[in-house]
Image 1 (cartoon, rainbow, N blue to C red):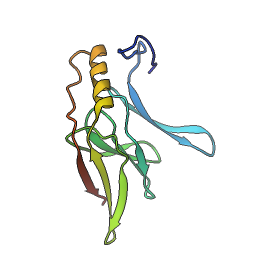
Image 2 (image 1 turned 135 degrees about the vertical axis):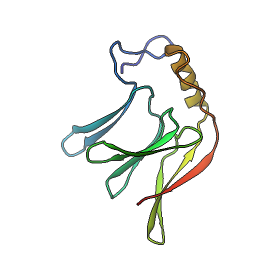
Image 3 (image 1 turned 120 degrees about the vertical axis):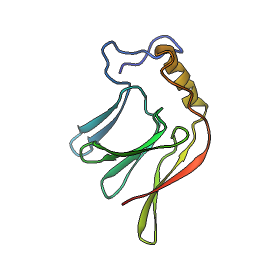
Image 4 (image 1 turned 60 degrees about the horizontal axis):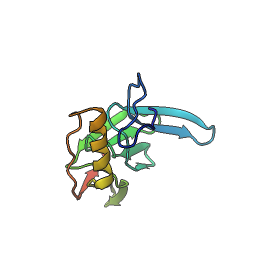
Length: 140
């Protein structure tokens, strides 16, 4: 999607079918491997990959953490949290079991962007609560 335009309102490229995306690139070849489109949300969150071929990220206005297959970009799993996710996911092991943890809690910048999106798409983006909670998920 193209960006730019008057201050305070996001510029939407006519005919665009999405607002944000996740891309995977092969650093050896410089070629894009896959793209996952977010229809109505930019992406603000950090990403983490695992040795097992998973990519974890949040940062979307649906308040979810998402897990992708690193090889093809297929969305494998997602889980709701009470707020948006900007913090980088982390992984750790306890007694041989692997976990992914992330902080759910938006701050002012993302809340401001959510308000800005409502200028372009009135009423489509409900407020996302700010907050701060830690979410931990076990990997199977």
